[in-house]
Length: 416
Image (cartoon, rainbow, N blue to C red; front, side, top):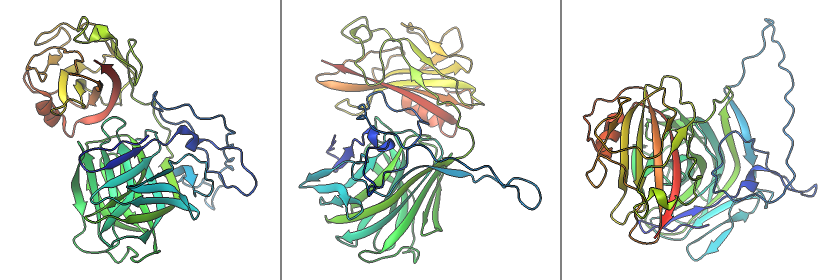
């Protein structure tokens, strides 16, 4: 699937789940290593074709060192690898006037033939702390370009962190939010660590651990940045043009690492009324009873002191439209019943915020026409917020800054 946005062409490409399983192949084919099912796959993901899974390699027992102690475990372990030699591993194959995305010459080619635009491909998985590595070389186009890796891409808004280098030796860490790029850190001058010139290979590493973001090239750490906007999301490769068209990149040896410590269960938001990506029943919209749907969630991270809930429409014609704001939900809460009545505060101490209608209540989906996405986002916070009742979502998001331990989201659709 391709998604072209008016704010500069951004191609969003569905990477079907088959990338995470093996497939029948002859001896000459090198299949990507299997990615275990460690994280939630969006419920809207297409079912993968029947395939033969690659069995995980057996891990030999740890040998004791000369002191009699077992060796220290490496902090990262590879859970997925692809050298792109097996052309049915699942990455998108796209050939249009604006560019090419396909297997080529034993790698994966990303050719962007539109000025000032960015293409990406991603894996359709969620990761918390993650490290991604890839080999990349420029095979054509202008020296003013950018290419690299990304992490923590949101399934709905496509907000993410990007780790860019360019053929002139410059580099940056940026975040995309609401279709715009914001520079978190960038180079003052070109780095000698970056190999320049057509065909020169650079080994890129992007690390997203908590609020820390790190970019390394050819084993040299170039940049660090700190940001708490996105705590989990997808990973992938990215290529873009800066000014003129024609950025042409060949990627190889793509690897995903996670920390070797046991992974906690994901924080998830659910509803008995509809599934992720499914239509929201008319009862919960302006065309029905206009009452809030039932919601429930799994255990939050340790240290959670309260929850905040924001429900909005990112597809509204004039920009994101906020339908419901609720905060200071107690840390022991695990559900909201159907039809939460309007009001300033509630028996459990939680407070209503102001929605885009300037009302302190739930307002159901009510698109002017067509199909819109509607997102419930529940934040687990390490504090109880001070804002007065009636605070809107912008005020609330500012108050929550640096206090978000994790978040869970649930997206539904409604059509009129």
